[in-house]
Amino acid sequence: MRRWNGWGDDTHQAELTDFAKALIAELLGETRPLPDASLQDAVERVPASRAPDHSLLDKTPETRIRHASGQSFSDWLQMRSGAFEHIPDAVAFPENSLQVRDLMAWAAQQDVILVPYGGGTSVVGHLACPVGEKAQITVALTRMNRLLDFDKESQIATFGAGVRGPDLEAQLAAIGYTLGHFPQSFELSTAGGWVATRSSGQQSLRYGRIEQLFAGGTLETLKGTLEIPGLPASSAGPDLREMVLGSEGTLGILTEVKLRVTPLAEAEQFYTVFMPDWESGVAAVQAITQGRIPLSMMRLSNATETDVSLKLAVPEKKLSRLNMLFRLKGLTDQKCMLTFGLTGSKKQVSVNRKLANTYLKQHGARRVLSRRLGDKWKEGRFKGPYLRHPLWEHGVGVDTFETAMDWSALRPYINVVEQSITKALKEQDIPVFAFTHLSHVYPQGSSAYTTYLFPVANTYEETLERWKIIKKLASETVVAHGGTISHQHGVGRDHAPYLPAEKGALGMGALKALSTHFDPDHRMNPGVLISEETVTDTEPA
Image 1 (cartoon, one colour):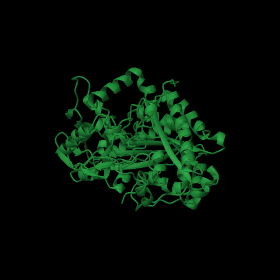
Image 2: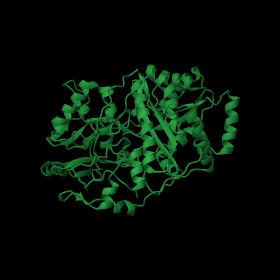
Image 3: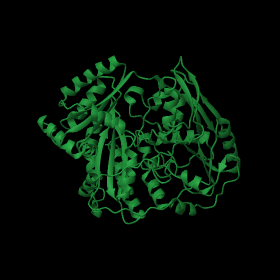
Image 4: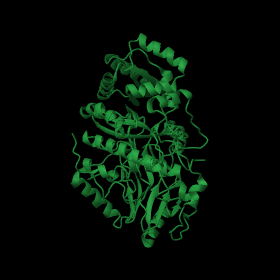
């Protein structure tokens, strides 16, 4: 069963090795965990429902708890403490577009708030609707999870928007196709959620981000049903798909999605190679992308992430032998790990591997090419979030932030971001450990994804304050360097104050007008994207 107070399936138990615990002690000093609440403790705190009756609603306390939050760090603290600030008054489980339409008409009559719920994987506060006078209904699309139509000639598959990644891929694999969209949240996140947050999959170099894969669909709104046709291209005015992409539930509820799928590839391989340092690694990634070499993914870890990844992934004895090999190849502790994927026909995979190797050698790659490490990356590509549990139980808080920017802005940003974050709690004499990788690359620039760890405090309240300090500093650093506040996680409520720095006053006015057109009473997921609190005094560098 899915955990009520954390990530994923409770049958999967990640553990920290003694080596990992020693590494944490070295980096963060002594850490102590906070006490966790039980499910029963949390259920007993659930207030009485204010929701009117409706046949689709479940008002039981446990169901409401299980749909009360996403996976942001503030959500995590609420789940672990059992003290939820935001609990829906009921959860609706529609099974088709007609039921969603009926529910929205009822919501308007009853004057209640609606919050769409896909996989509950949001890490930026999409689900934490502020408590107000109006009852809040969470609309879980869990049961809308089937392949509804498949146009083989056009390679367009239509799914219920609540379909999770594994179920979507299983239904497509049965007919010989794939969508190829693999975010780290793949196990739990949904097709509708991917569209609503402009998601990016780990193999976006081959398959594209969700905006390239989303062909059209059905959006149920308070003003009626918006049908978006699945055209290959159009010059007939602004693209209505773009209104829905990234709308995060503020315009309506996406019930059906038309997706551009691809026949299953004949071959797929992943390799890891080591670059002498960060600069050579960035130059190689940039050159390969701008050279249009058709790889399916590239991930470049900086020296810190490389060191930690090897220590956690490779047994100590094998790591000792590997380090000897590194030294023989002239690789120092500044080496950076670059993992790349090859997908296509056997011939394409072979040719593209040779092309990639040519570029890598030109930029100083040593001949330490490992398919074993590449396969290990593939094997663990969705397991990262599970580490949050054993880290928490060891007294360590962990979170991430990400951005994307042009190559010209990326280098200065990378040089300062980790320095800023590691000093965020310096006044309190509290260490913070951070590391970064590039995982979605474009000819113009790249995403940059930073993970940071810090000791939890003596209370949940103090721990939240530590996180807020780091989060604010990270967001301000991103904005100051001209990056987007979110490359793949969406805006939610956590990032909404920083959105005006990217969109500008005129752009924010357009977004507000669009939201008001579809939702004049501000009934749909209020506070997401458009926030009363804005940050406008931070100008890009």
